[in-house]
Length: 264
Image (tube, rainbow, N blue to C red; front, side, top):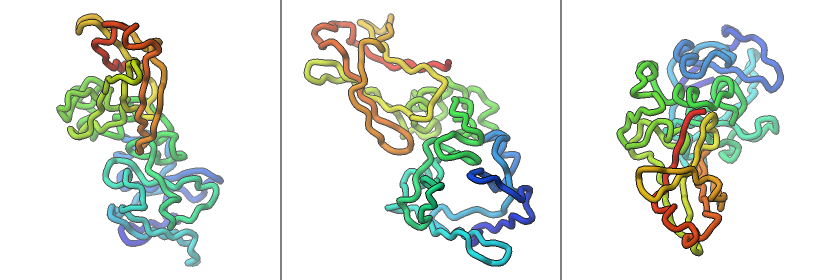
């Protein structure tokens, strides 16, 4: 690799790799394993860092033969989600040997923190898409040691949304401007509820509840059906649920609607 970093695989820890297998080179092994676990094969360590604005990466054999060379960027048509929002830049369908210099050959990772050591979309450092894996990708070691900051009920950015809701909705727990909303409206006489969901979030219960007051809520999941789902990027979808019965038939049951998220 050239420009920002240089790494010699002959001096690394991994001298062979099985077909379609993955390996990573990291700046700090201990910090990487604390964040992603110890499943990923680590070829070795590198110094410095790649340029976030764009750079050239080249893989060369010991005889000087070029294997791959790519110059990436951070502006359109390169994936915008991978530009500073916590998502990595990942090659789409690598088994088909796509042109690495074609921006359409690349996409943002489906989860914040990327998926080092495994195929795209299979999580980070071993494919674990649980809340614990998500918080490791979002918080520093010091923050992880403080349950009030990184725990499911924490709200480090003060946006009145818990970490668990941010995990379920696909928002960022340390960015007060990155918030999810629950919009209740009507469509042809039926109640609709619009919200966002992270496609990679697993290990939780995510349900709609309603009430005639703000005291006693009941599960309303069976009273709604999926109306539409739209990919809004970064592995997040905008989902609209529509009541099975009309607003008139529901009466005051839908006077208040909320989203409840719990860890399984």
